[in-house]
Length: 596
Image (tube, rainbow, N blue to C red; front, side, top):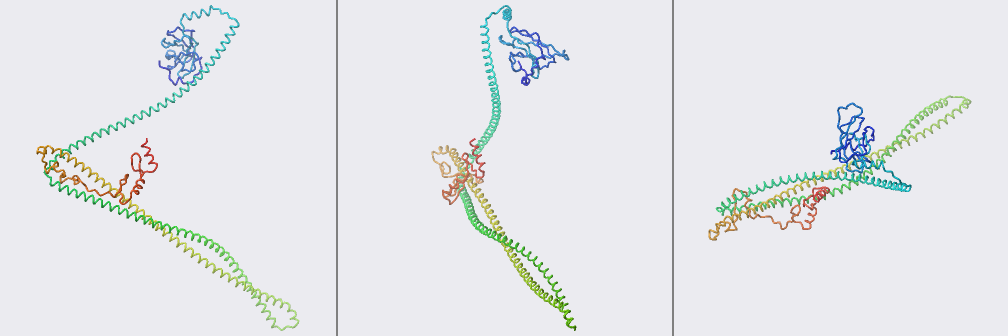
């Protein structure tokens, strides 16, 4: 039977039991028999409301034993109270006859709208026997039995409380187990999703592998087709080679000479590149030495420049002091000029007074007056004479002060001129030091640019040398492949000519490969010369040491220097890839990816 929705069952229960009243509920129902319950609702039922049978003592709407959906009734729409009935089939009813149950009405929101009185499931015989015992038996007990029953009841109550506590503990443990089960379920779902994701990835990888296998099959088929074509061409070529034995020898010799010349030219080109790189390295070292010497000179000049700057700062401080002294001297000069002008004015006033007194004395001396007049005028005349003498002395003193002031002004002007001349010399020296410093910096910058250009040329030549070396290795590899092809052609030719040799009574033909194993079959003259090379003159590498990582040859170095060069490479320990261009963090990620 389909249960109520989980959302409705999870709602908190509202104990509003009075909204639905169950009618005529007996104390017991016969077992294994369908039963009908009648109830009256004070509201209009919802199609998703349901009536369930619960064991007495239930705690949640999920604790139902069975339930039946409420059937809607359209003929009672608008009535305040609705009387309905619900049928429970015997198959879904409880089988336990010792427990008590009750009907509960649960609405669509999970609220309990009503509950019936308890009932049980008993047969009619048991029910009648119980009723007769209840009606006819008179129990007679003593006080001791009553006390004992009370004690037993208390003990049973204690055991019941203990059982309830254990029940609560078990319920909490069960709730915790449910939570753990929910967590485990979520983890399991996550793992299932990861598993499905991995399965999808495996499917994609298998699909890619299938595509690669199909591609590989196609390539193998193409290779088989090419082998068949090559075998056909080889057969045709061997048939033609029987008539071209002499031409084959000449073509083989010419091909060997061409290959030897090509190898010699490549080796010479490689040696010239190595020599040029060594020369550029020597020039680079010389430039580095020159730069270091110039750096030392520049450091010395910078020290001298700093000392000159300190002296310049001291001179500027002295100049500022001298300027302050000059300003004070100018102020003193102005003051002395004003004093001199004032003294000059005073001298002129004194001169005029002196002239006036002289004139008056002259007039008085020329007049012939009586002795009484002379006696009366002698007093003022002496006063005038004394004033005149004092004015002359004061005038002489002012003249001396004026001359001293003029001498001080001249000395101060000369000192100011000398200070200005020294300041100009210091400024010129500083400018000269700055020009020298800028010149050395320009030379240093040019030297660094020249070193950078040399480094670029060295890198370019090294790149060219690597290209030449790779080309040489490709040529060597192609020659080896051609040798193996020629050996295969010889063996195929020998297998084809084997019956002919048997038919001629074991007399080998001088023109056949079976009879003359030293003869090298030559291809068509129109083919590439490398296709007929047997022994290519490779450059002697007995004295060349090759790096086992970058496969570069270094002429003229020792075994220890080669080991230092090999140790300078950053090589992956798993795939042996050279990782010199990688940063440390990228290199570590690359190595860890192999461990994963």
